[in-house]
Length: 385
Ligand SMILES: C[S@@+](CC[C@H](N)C(=O)[O-])C[C@H]1O[C@@H](n2cnc3c(N)ncnc32)[C@H](O)[C@@H]1O
Image (tube, rainbow, N blue to C red; front, side, top):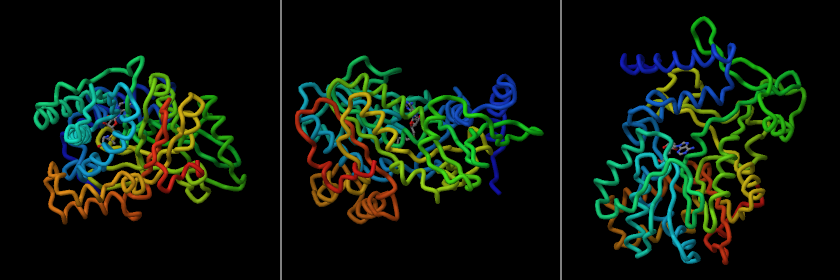
């Protein structure tokens, strides 16, 4: 049993009251997607909106850019492949977390003489925006003026868009197959405690998606997630990108593997102080809630909106194609302060199949690029989408 600090408990109780009000206003239950949105993004109270440390050793989880700058330096090489084909070059990062990835990409591009005109950030959390500003102002004072925070997508954008572990933090709808029927998972309150409740599927897009998940009628208690928010987000990126590329990096699978009969409990996970579990109804506001990404849905949406699906690789193949091991061998990559042993350990964490190498994927979408991006041909898995 976890011990919760009394201040943290009081914070969670305040968010509980907000959630309770939403449930009452909705007549007794809300779709899980609404609950997840409230838990993560209620201003001042949601997990990402409030002021706790989230990333790294003293937070709840560690992301690739926090493990080693080599991750962002390698991504910068892929970015430069796109830059070579553009006449204008800007960068746009979604959900920049601590600001570390932005900082390391900018430092690498500066070193390579390939800086963008601007590095835009769109960040859902006001608290994280503040932390990003502080981090970048302190660590990159000479490049800080390049960084601009936006509240919404620009109408038109030429350049490269990057998003690491952003789709997994978008609210998902949860479906439950039982008694030969699909239900949607809602959240209700019973006796003062948050509880699951099945209900009718709340919108047409979800109904259509459930038809694509083939189930044997005898199957009981099969759960699956649908991330309509991420699909809408890809459509909005397609709308604003005039020319360039989008790198979407996250843990996830192609559709066949995502909705595999054996994955019967879905992919919903929670993290509290580096402990993973599968109950999002406890500690509202104190824990991260996340689900794996169904990449086929993102690729289909991209294609239907006029983007080219240019690559789908494991994180390991993407980083190896980007030359992560050359960066390690290159003594001039001395912006990195870790010694060789630590760097080697970091590369293992980022690329080994038993660590992040296989479970994380990179989906690359492009628009109007005159040439293919050769690094994306290494172990390309688009056939699986
Ligand atoms: C799991 S964290 C990843 C942070 C960072 N990219 C990293 O790799 O360390 C998810 C981030 O995405 C942000 N986020 C989620 N949905 C977003 C959206 N629709 N627009 C912008 N930021 C979003 C969160 O506030 C948070 O900064």
